[in-house]
Image 1: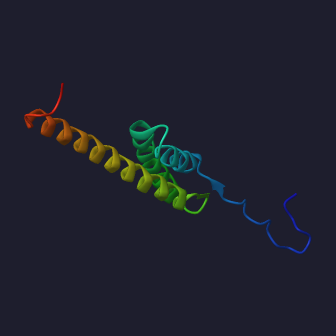
Image 2: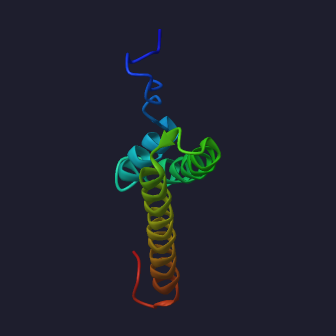
Image 3: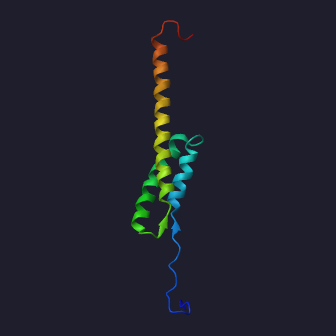
Length: 103
């Protein structure tokens, strides 16, 4: 059944793409605006899980680059959100201490 007619074994199946890596990248990109913090955290978790699964699959799965990109985008957006929160917190605290700030 798997004989090619010339005595060679059939070629191995093509590696499959890890779906967690795909979703990590998608949520990492969506974390830039619509999903912000939540999408970034999920992108981190899925990216780490995908990287582990891809390494354990021994070449049967692809998507390591997508998983890495999802993790990087997730960390980047978490840093942006934290910086944004700190900026507005410091602005608010600065306004409270200023005598001419507020109504």
